[in-house]
Length: 444
Image (cartoon, rainbow, N blue to C red; front, side, top):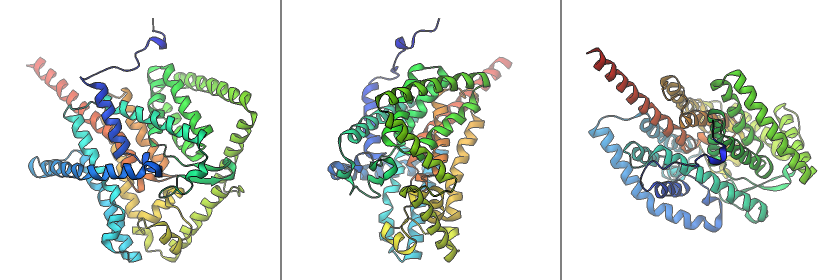
């Protein structure tokens, strides 16, 4: 008889110093693989100083690693190759900015240097391959980071008025949207998405009721606190579609009915607490539907996106040659002066076309061919939870690229999924070699 979920083990240790390694990986991702702390001015200067102090060592070790792989071993694994290619992207953008806007090349390169931090993911994968850390530890560290974000963002959203941070860094920590209640936070949801994918797959692959509850808690945060409509749709849509890929029809119906019942209960509880919460949320998503139907919504942020895309269209009509190589990623002031009041990350693939051009988009989207290759390559580990986290993770990044386009400016958003997939590619290869060796032994 299957044990009650309350008696299931929360985690299993697979190496000595398991917790210490998970915590170390959590800190590494917090400081070097995310902008979580950099979003707040009160801690951003300290965080930046710490990161800058350690980055030279990371780049030195990365240089040694690639020198050894290229000149000594004379081989690169697919992940190394993708990372090296991704380093060409900021250089490509810097050159286009120099040619189009006459920005000094060194200054343009300096402005895009944060995007070369992706090189440290090679070291992370090397540590996994060398057995210094395990894939399970890496996954758990991302889950800890997910709940760290959940706790931090929820606390800040419920206790600190967004206006306090309205002069946030870069694109701004705070935006203004009347349909969402005025000033709102614009937190990054990258690690929350990892948790959503993990717990969703935990439920549909392993029938984990705890996984379903944790998934719905994270979804509730996105729905009622974060209020990011595009983010929520781009996260949930690939998850639900993925069910049709890996489950049979009877399982799909059962899972969807369970999700629908729990969602209904959650909405009923929210309605009993405050009926306006449901009405407010419904109005937000009605505006969202009208936006995609091309109708005027009367909502500033939604209508502004159409204006931004129109500005991009007229700019490319005026400068048709730029559509091939893009204009790079100039600062907001340069965009406003030349294109219009455009924020590249707000308009997804349209912003990607403006910044990267057709050539850049083809280069970036070619990365998604690798997960497709892995999907057909891996057979034995096809049902493994983390393997599916990697596959669904890349699918989610692809869908998100159509709306917010983070991958056009940094490959960090897809690296966790690629690390997982490369791990399983090698694991499958080793399994197949062992099976062949067993068959040869039996035949002899």
